[in-house]
Structures are given as structure tokens and as C-alpha cells.
Length: 229
Image 1 (cartoon, rainbow, N blue to C red):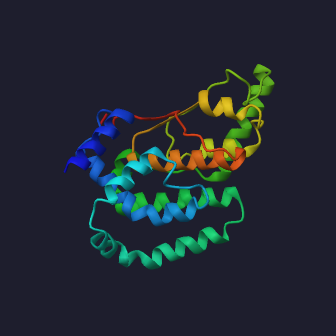
Image 2: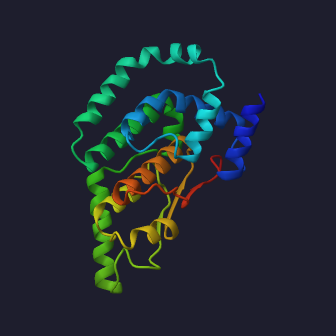
């Protein structure tokens, strides 16, 4: 209907003009299925009220038959309960990122096996992410006499996935609290080609920034490129 047309145009205007109606429908279905997981993962961050994509998705969900939606997700009750329990037992930022990475690795491979195989969707273990980040800092210090948090040091994550690299960077302490706002707003650049991963990453990165600063700030450094190229 008209609401969906507005939603699709909004995705095309803000994310990528190449987003198709089928992709938007798929993203909407994924949002409905994963919303309870998001709410558990990002509890206390006012999700989905703060994230622009989440707000647009929720506006469409509210137009749907809530009874029909509930009946579709009823069979997932035990899955949601298991995820909530795992999240409640997560004692650190790292363990929460492990849950997000493993959850969506499993989600893609089981729900969209052909997409996962075609795009080569593989998520880097958090320990490897942390090692790479500290290695970059060591290389910058040794060879360029600068730090990862310094102004004009631009950082690019070309295959962002669920945003683990930038989340762990924000949480690592490699960037001082004084330098973090500028770095976050101007010098972090991420790219993704899968709508759901793009959506997860923005919420994940925004929540990490909120956790470090106490301030909610939309992450504008994320780009969605054409999925068919």
C-alpha cells in the first residue's frame, strides 16, 4: 500500500537507490523475526526508537495485522527465550559481540544459505578482531608516529557485517573519550551489501558509542552498496 511505497522510497533515498521492493519486503520479514532478539541485545538503548531504519520498519509493522504477525513468530518462542538467557549471562562487551556474530552467522547460513554462499558471509572471531585493531595501532605508532585515535587517521571497514570491528574499536580504549566524538562522526567509514547486516551494524555501532559516551548519536559513516553488483 501507500505506507510501503513511502517506506521503500525512504530506504532508496537514505540507503541506496538500488534497493528493490523484494529486498525491502525481505528486510521487513527479517525485522519482524529478529525484533525480540534486538530488544534483548540492545536493552536500555531505546531501540528501536533511536535508530532511523528501525523506526521506519516499525512504522510498517504497526500497520500490519498484529495477530497474524504474532502467530507467525509463536513457534520461535523457545528460540527467543534461549537468546534472552544467553544475553543475560553475557558478562562483557566481548561476549555480547560473540553472541551477535554467532547468532547472525547461524541466521544467514540457515535462513538464506544461497545468499550466504554467494556472498561469502563469514564473520571474524572477536579475538581476531581485537588482535587486528591492536596490530593497526602498533603499526601506526611504529611506522607513522601516530595513533588510531588521532585526527585525520581515516578508518575503513569495507565489509562491515554486523559492525564488530568498529564496535570493538569504540570499546577498546584505543581512542580517548576526548577524540571519540570526532572520530565517530567524521573518520569511521563502513560498507555493507546485505540490508539486514547493514541494519544490525548501525544499531550495534550506535549502541557501542552510547555505552562509551552516554550520548546517542546516529552513525552516518555506514554505506549500503548495490547488492547485485
